[in-house]
Length: 197
Figure (spheres, helix red, strand yellow):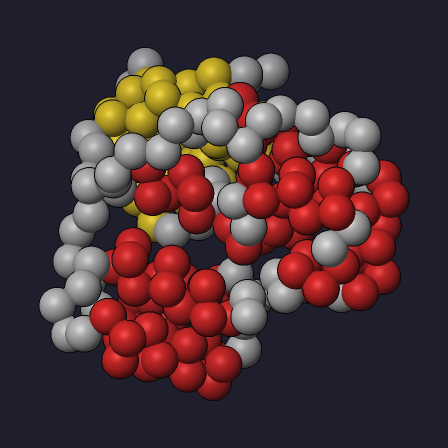
């Protein structure tokens, strides 16, 4: 069982990273929040959840222990698998998730792709007393970014479960708000923010 992984980054995409350790490249699935923190870095240090099924073994990595805890609480809920949990943590900050659950904010949770009203209600019911970390337990610092294109942002949103036309519209609206010279991370965050409204 792998619980922590550290090493050089071989490749990085919005939903996964390949980390080299001991001559082996580990494919690790990550939420967007972790992607933002890894972007521009040469090495990764990740809290790992090893998900084992009869036919597969998958690694899910997180930049903070709060994210890993939230992920493990999510997949303990009936009907929420690791892929949907990864999408949920990509669509909402872990501390915002805790706040939405505490307030019973079904509308905010339902704005995440793949999460309907019934799933949102179940999240509020089953996680209410289980996400107890504070909103400031992990400080947020400016993240290094690399320039990319609107197509990359649209692709990232589609990978998160949004329909292509909706993703394109959100990225276009974000580009109009931010201007032409904008980094990928900022463009993607802005598009996600517009989709959450």
